[in-house]
Each structure stands twice: as C-alpha cells, then as structure tokens.
Length: 157
Image (cartoon, rainbow, N blue to C red; front, side, top):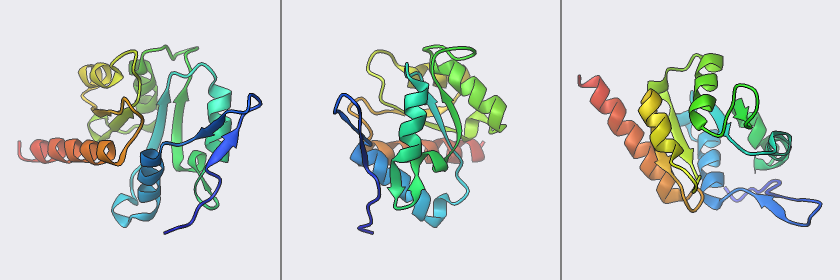
C-alpha cells in the first residue's frame, strides 16, 4: 500500500536494526489480509538480549502506527529461566501460555547454528520453515504451503 512507518532503529554502536523485507511483507499481510484475521502471532527467540529484542519489537512498525510488538500476542524471548538455547523450550512455554495446539502452529526460523525447525517439529509436530538467509517472500509462501498441506492431510484422515 506504499505506507511506511518506523522501519529501522539505530543502535548506540550506529548499527541499524530492521526487519528482513520478507518478514516485513509477511507481517503486513498478516495485518491487512482478511484471511489472516484470526491468526495469533507469537515469538520464540533465543537471543541473548531479550529486553533489546522487546524494545525493537515495540519500536519498529509494520505499517504506520502498528508496531511489530503490538502484533505479537505471545513472546518467549531469551535463554534464562524456563527458556534455553533450544526453541523446544520456547514452544513449550508458548503452548502453555496460549493454549494453542501445536498442530495449529507455523514456525519460521533463521538460525544457522542449529536446526530448531527440525527439533520443534520432532518434539511437538509443529510445521516449520527454515529461513537461513532471513525471511524471504519465498520462505513465507513455502511455510504457508507446508502448513496448508498438513492441515489438509489431517482433515482427510
């Protein structure tokens, strides 16, 4: 729609934090497309600086006036307490907090040091899409297609 809100934030080290284009487009679609009106969005991140991640989510905008943070109803961010570097722990907590069945979750992950998609899928049956170069439109579409195929397969059994 051509609208652009706050799309980057400069750190004290002068680096700019911004979403990958594919992630921004996916969030814009989730926000504007009626087919996604009932989708609940959550975050599973094993980042070392959860307060920084939260601050970025609450600053960066998907469209003017709508922050990333406002779209994420659930956030499991960090590696302390009940959370470890394994996103299996994050999904356990997301499920407990939200009550959303694992079979209704779709997970995108850009980790390059491990395969969280495989681990979460093996543990809970969550459909996932790896995004090793950051979220792209192709990754988004592939994840949606995998999720639709699994839902269709489950309904036919």
